[in-house]
Length: 137
Ligand SMILES: [Zn+2]
Image (cartoon, rainbow, N blue to C red; front, side):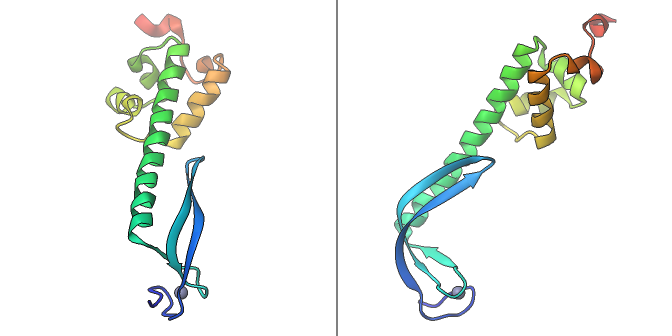
């Protein structure tokens, strides 16, 4: 087998652990088998390992998205705001906001960071323009 990246003909068969990381989550796959190029480090998984790799990749993305949407919902509830109210505060459409909470769309990182800050320091809500008194007027 020839290396698809550099053309080296001496690919080495190896069994090793492979760690996937995505947005701060990581997952380790054990006994992953593949052919590796000692020259450029390119690797090709065998069929079974490749299948496990793609499954794990999908699972970790789902886990991260699920966590983030649960975080957003939890933070909003702790602030006692409706989706409409919080979406107005942060200047995001309420449709988009509800997609973030349902995990249909990945929320932008700056929004997640902002909400995490506000969760720890709820008084910051006033700083970014939210006042309970203004809600109905
Ligand atoms: Zn190579």
